[in-house]
Length: 220
Image (cartoon, one colour):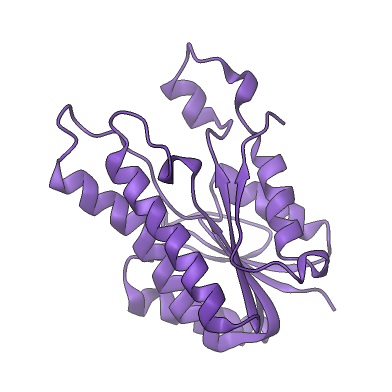
């Protein structure tokens, strides 16, 4: 019987690639998306605001009822924004904290009670959390929170549910190409390559790995 996998941000470029990677392994997949009116061959819960803990909890309960249990949670949902010149716009800090950290916290809190023993959570952080560039303080701080959450949950859960994170740099997506048309894309990482690493961290082959923050930055 295939594993039951939940992916947030499931209709985005990386979420789609992650779903494809798990589908190749025969997993049953549930996608959660904020946008309403989406479509997918997998179980789809769209129009879900994961910054609301009750909405996250309800989504996890619906998925458990549909799939029977949760084996893997992949927290892809998030966002990026550059700050204004002084780097201290409260609305940017609040927006990125909500998009990147609150969604992750709320989904972990909502999903854990539905996990089978031996499950895995994989969060999407960012290498910028440790080395932010100009205008990236709010983004880096929110992703640093994802890293600390990953390590703390791994210690708290004691291996019953393994918790790891991947740390991309720049993902080769249409949105990033449009935002940086003159950039050298030779060092960008494809969504498919990142998805393969996520699938590995959730697999039995990585059963001894928990609390890891794994940079995924090679061109691929």
